[in-house]
Image 1 (cartoon, rainbow, N blue to C red):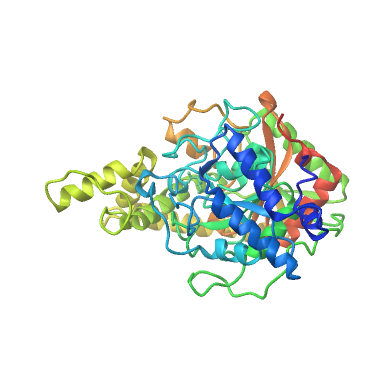
Image 2 (cartoon, rainbow, N blue to C red):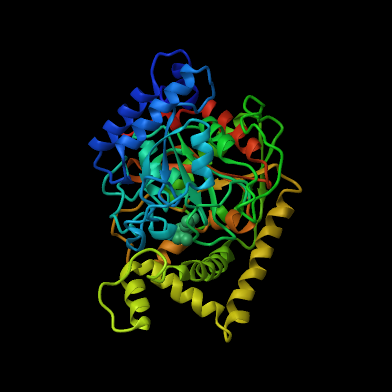
Amino acid sequence: MSAQERSLRRLAACLERGEVSALELAQDCLARIAASDLNAFIDVQPELTLAQAREADARRARGEAGTLLGVPLAHKDIFVTRGWRSTAGSRMLEHYVSPFDATVVERLAAAGAVCLGKTNCDEFAMGGSNEHSWFGPTRNPWDRAAIPGGSSGGSAAAVAAGLAPAATGTDTGGSIRQPAAMCGVTGLKPTYGRVSRHGMIAFASSLDQGGVIAASAEDCALVLGAMAGFDARDSTSVERPGEDFTREIGRPVAGLRIGVPREFLGDGLAADVRAAVEAALAELRALGATLVDISLPQTELAIPAYYVIAPAEASSNLARFDGVRYGHRAAHYADLREMYDRSRGEGFGAEVKRRVLVGTYVLSAGYYDAYYLQAQKLRRLIADDFRRAFESVDLVAGPVAPTVAWDIGSIVDDPVSNYLADVYTLPASLAGLPGMSVPAGFGRGGRPVGLQLIGRWFEEARLVGVAHAFQQATDWHLQRPA
Ligand code: GLN
C-alpha cells in the first residue's frame, strides 16, 4: 500500500464503506511488524490487538462511526498501557505492566483506535538516536545503517516503513520532530499542556508533551483531535474548549508572514540540509507566504539551559525507581543502601545515569543558583525571543536538525555531539510552543530532511494548515523507503 492509500482519511473511508474491516487492517499491520527487521517495537501482543480490532468492528456494526474507529495505531513505549508492557526503553521497567492506561491511550481507545503495540525509544526518552534503548537500537527504514532519530524513533520508523499508519510520540526537546524528520514522516508536537501527561512516564515534566507521528499533516491533526483535551489528573493540563485541528486545512498560505530565524541557518547547518530547507522555504514563498528574516538571539543558549533543566527534572522524576515499589531489583545485596545502589546501577543505562548525576549536581545546595536558577532565566529569555518574533510573523520556519540521520554507533560515546544536534528543536520546547516536522526532501546518502514549523501557543491548527498546503504542493511526504 502506498503512503496515500494508508492515509487515515482513506482508511476511515474504507472502513466506513465496509471495504475492509478493522480486523483485516490489524492483521495486515501485525504481519508487517512480524516481518520487519527494524526493531521498531518493544512489545507486540497480537491477541490483544485483534480483540480490540474485533471490538471496533462490532462498534461499527452497531452503527457507531468516527474517523479513528478501527484504525490501527502504535504507542511509544513511554505511555503506560494495560496488557502491553510499559518499559520506557529501560531495563528498570523491562517486565513492568501498568495497572492502568495513560490518558492518551484511553482517549484513543475510546475513539476506536486499535493498539498495535509499543514502540522502541531511548531510555526514559533521553536521547535523539534510539541507541539508548535497553532493547537495542531501532534502524532507519531508509538506510539500516542509520539511526531513526529519537527518542520516538520506533514510532517514526514504524510509520515510515508502513508498519503502522500513525503512532504516538513524546517530545521533551525534539523527540517527535527530529525522528519524524530523519524518517521522512510528519510529526506534531503540541503546545505544552495540550495533551495530558497522565500515564506518560516522566522525563522532564515541565517540557514533556505527547503528540503524534503520521504520514501527513492532516493525519497528525486527526489523531491529535482524539488525544488532546483537559485532564484533571494532570495538573499542567490546560482547560480549553475542544477544537478541530483540521479546520485550517484548505486555507490559503498567501498573506501569511513566516519568520526564518537567521540563527537557524548559521554555520552549524549541513549543506545538504540547508539546500533542502531553503527549497522548502522557497516553496512556501511560491504559495504566497512572505518570508521574513528574524532573529532569535538566544538560540544557542537553549542547549545549556535545556541540559540543566531537563536533567534536573529527570533526577527528581527517576528517584521513584528505587527497587522497592516497582521496577528492577538487584538479586544480591547486603543492606538497604546496597539494594538501592545495585538496583539503580543495574536498571539504568549510561545516558540515564549521566543525566541523574548532572541533575542532582545542578540542584544541589551549593550549585542551585549558579546552574538551575540561571537556566530558568535563560528559559524565560528564549520564550521572550519567540514572543517578540510573533509580534511580526505568524509562524517560524527552519530546519529540524543540523544534519540528516547519522550512522548507528558513530557518535554514541560523545554525549556533547548528541546534545548539540538538538539546537533547533530545544528553543520551542523550552518556550512550550507547538512545532511540526514536515518531510522536505533528501540529503546525503538519500536520508530524509525535515522542515520545522513553529507556531504561537495553541495555534496547532495554523501549523497543520500550512503543512497541509506544503504537502499539497510537494510529494516528499508520499515517498517511502524501498
Ligand atoms: N534529544 C533530547 C534529549 O536527549 C530530546 C529528548 C526528548 O525530546 N525526549 O534530551
